[in-house]
Image 1 (cartoon, rainbow, N blue to C red):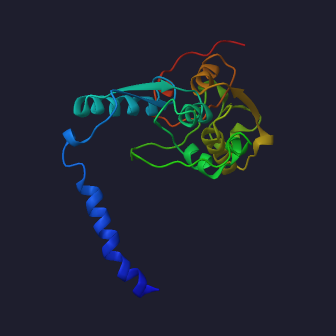
Image 2: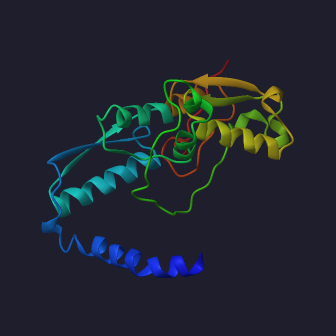
Length: 215
């Protein structure tokens, strides 16, 4: 087996060299004048990254990139499947779609054939944003609190469940409040409809402190 792999290695390497050598310069790359990509809501990290990539594409290749905001994982991948967008700025929802699990386990979805084009590594993490007046200091304090979920977004929801498990809690120990989109979930926190939405701390919504309305 090892000898067979060694015999094939030069062929594979030659192929890689050829592929790498094809785009010798920006002029050799031919792209359509306009491309559409999907991302999370306006102001989120994914949206801002997509806009930054779009500016690079415009500067280097003259291609306009339209960033289509979508509120959940399913909404971001639907235009891709319908061929109305060429790519999507996704997170762990990509793996769920590829495996056909959670919301992507429905008959109309199933496992999706997805490829990774670009990956970013930054100072980011999963977190639960908690209202200051909710009385939550530790994960275990979320018992009985209203935790925000986004319909059609297993990436956010599964992260929330994992963090609850860290505090020894399950979905049954909290009150799940469902929202239509990521942005709507954070507005729900502001409007006192939820106590703890799921989100990394870097996007704009968690960084805009506003007073909550009285019950």
